[in-house]
Image (cartoon, rainbow, N blue to C red; front, top):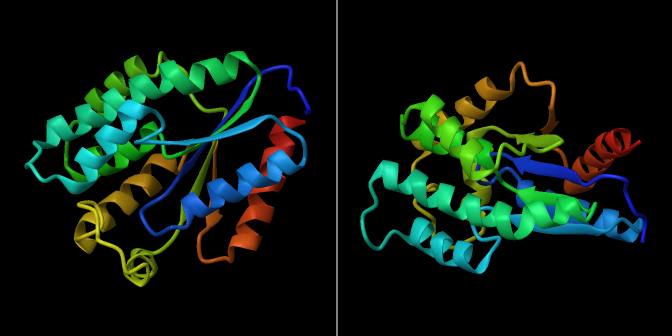
Length: 208
């Protein structure tokens, strides 16, 4: 296995239906084939506790207050960083996370209208002030994302039911990233092969 001198942390972000989860898996497979020690994880659900919280957040059989919703994500994040992210970074691995703290800003901040500065403060605390080395944002129009979600023929999560909500989330991501130098935006309308090539080119530059 190729060993890095330091751990390298990548977050893959985007709205539901953007293709980010498939991209995250493809990057993971590619880097492993190159011989890099890589782990693939996600939020929510990257730990046993996270899997339980993921079920609560996506099904919401019991109504969840918007503040409580964010705090459940924050609880998942704190456990995720303690159990998965920090140990992997300490062992100089490449970590690919399908979603991270920026999703909470987009979904609960812009989407649910919670105070963004408060969310950032709690996120930083949950993450131990650790930030990704690189964030890859897969940008796609919400109309296309909705068509993809419906084509899955799966039960919709609470976050996928209303396009008006998704429009707010998409706007949030775009506004959040317009001046960020640690974020690379990829065109989610491309094929997964093209997206992977673009992502790998970016990652290789950072690893060098």
